[in-house]
Amino acid sequence: MEGVYNKYLPTSDWGWQIDPIGLRTILINLYDRYQKPLFIVENGLGAKDSLTTSGKIHDDYRIDYLRQHKFLSNTV
Image 1 (tube, rainbow, N blue to C red):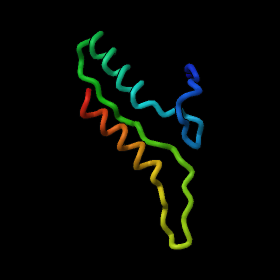
Image 2: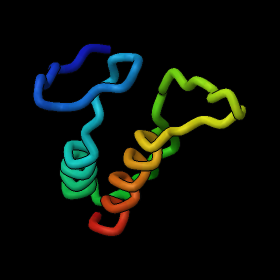
Image 3: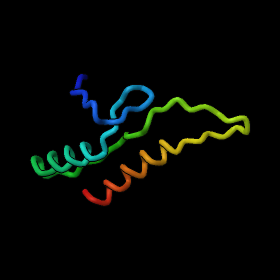
């Protein structure tokens, strides 16, 4: 499946673009068109994590990603 690359969007370690506002927009458009409930069943963040010497993962990027998408769940 191909899409349109937007050079202004951040990408994950795997090259997937991160666009919570775009996700919100498409969900609104789909709902307006079909008037059916929509369920997002997978929307995780693929990242290459590395452990610190103390065995921890510092993943502020993942926390920010989830925070952005959680915010959208309150606006749709």
